[in-house]
Length: 138
Image (cartoon, rainbow, N blue to C red; front, side, top):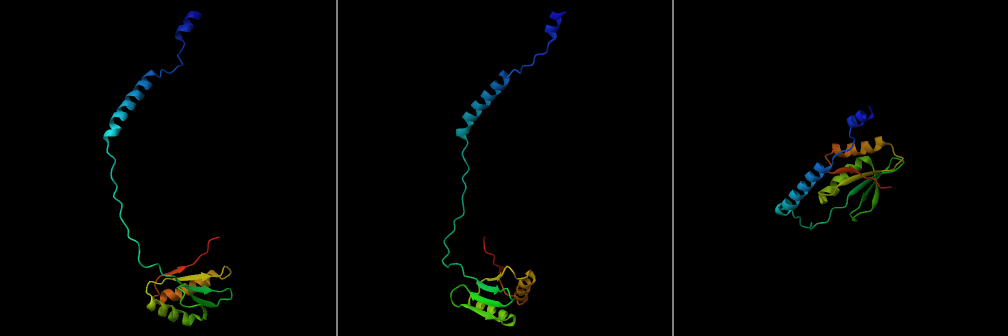
């Protein structure tokens, strides 16, 4: 009876010889075809250097007490105290001199978000172009 069990025993080994044959055939195929394939040429667009440097922004600063200051970073003017009524006219005057000059709003971190949004809303209602928020990295 022990002889019978030995004959019916399952074989638990995997025959890997056919897998090796397939892998060698694939390797030979790739080695032959790889030099024949020409790599695609990529033509990248060319960009010339800009002649004009980017324009420094006009900065509207909202202090912790809610007062506004206007600072021209282009170097033509310093920081001056300004009221909300004078803000739009001063910004428009600067943008008529330089139409590409953006306006950024810098609010003190203790200022309520509502105050910043009110100033931004005033500028956008008067069709001031290029209004954004200024954030400083940590």
